[in-house]
Amino acid sequence: MALHQKPHARDAQFDDVYASTELSVRIPKYTFPEHQRDPRHVYGLLQDELILDGGSRQNLATFCTTWAEPEVRQLMADCFDKNMIDKDEYPQTAEIENRCVHMLANLWNAPHAASTIGCSTTGSSEAAMLGGMALKWKWRERRRAAGLPADRPNLVTGPVQICWHKFCRYWDVELREVPMEGDRLILTADEIASYCDENTIGVVPTLGVTYTCQYEPVKEIAAALDRLQAERGLDIPIHVDAASGGFLAPFIDPELEWDFRLPRVKSINTSGHKFGLAPLGVGWAIWRERADLPEDLIFDVNYLGGHMPTFALNFSRPGGEIVCQYYNFLRLGKEGYRKVHEACYETAQFLAREIGKLAPFELIYDGHGGLPGAAWTLRHDADAGFTLYDLADRLRTTGWLVPAYSMPANRADLVVQRLLVRHGFSRDLGGALVTDIRRAVEHFARHPIAAPMTEHEAGGHNHAGRARHARTTASIG
Ligand SMILES: Cc1ncc(COP(=O)(O)O)c(C=O)c1O
Image (cartoon, rainbow, N blue to C red; front, side, top):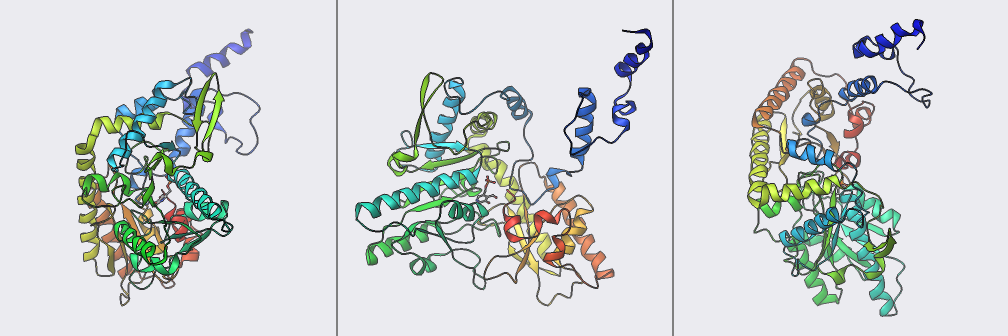
């Protein structure tokens, strides 16, 4: 190195990250960088930028894991190179995935849990696509076998998460989303007969409706479909969207019959990264019996010297989340999951009680019988001086993300605020949230907003970009 360059090299080696030349300027954001940079500087830069996302533990909109044991973080690092699709190269990761499939089938009371079929996915959305496709393929097979037209399939649901809208649009299926009416904010057995016909590929009840946290009554819906079969000869299967409830009900309410104990339930999806407590990026789709997944949806891929059946939508996919899912199964078992979730329910019920005591609010969901969360609205007669969008905005000043959104048809008039309590949210943090809500309400009582924020305006705000539309909000998962 030339003599005159030496001081530069020395500076570059010893300078504090924040005293470095590289971090003394704003970096260009939208043009591809020409030169390399010091990894310490880039890491510092990124760490700083990520602060602006806020603390995910204060994000009470999400259903997803935001706290994990150190062992989970270590396993994620250990597995950073595992590609789930390379079953030939990573046979043990594949074996672990397979064990998880059968453990879940067992947890959900599949009649032949050891031999049934299922797979991991990137989340419930992909798992829902697979469940929906199986329903469509099976329906088409039946129609063709009977010499009947198979060109106008429909799917009957309650107020579903956006993934079902996507499924129907992408796979050309008419979505019959039974609208909410009055105080009925979920699908019940009463609506089934009038929405189903010979073109219905399936009914999808949700165990843990995204908007209100409630469970739809799967058993009653199955019984209504039994009656429909007896009366009109229509044999319509059920796929349960148990994105959240699939990892709650078996531990908290094991007597609740929503799963493969009901013969009409042919498939179930869940998100491992929600109440399954795995890190982000894993879902599961499980079929009641092997025959419920049509053979022609399964690809047999000749890959790297081996044969492997695949029926996920993606090809390459990280394996760490699946290994961590298995870690949770072994680490927690039914006992551990029950204890973790019970703690969440107790905090959610505490929050619901405290929020319900505040004059302007009326509870819609109090943390019992569905997900560990709470949902509330403003009383009709509350002259509150704010909307729930204003409250969401105000809570943001202390870091809380508690979304407000309007319901879908036919209750678009109803604006709701909702929170979810997840692993890692202590009673103490809950107490801090209640204090901040109370302070916000008192603040608005002293300084009522002359022109309270509407849903449309809330959409213009950064955070409310997630919270503004019912559908967008509901998709926070
Ligand atoms: C009921 C329901 N279904 C499906 C999904 C989509 O799940 P994922 O985010 O795992 O794709 C969600 C997400 O919140 C949900 O609540």
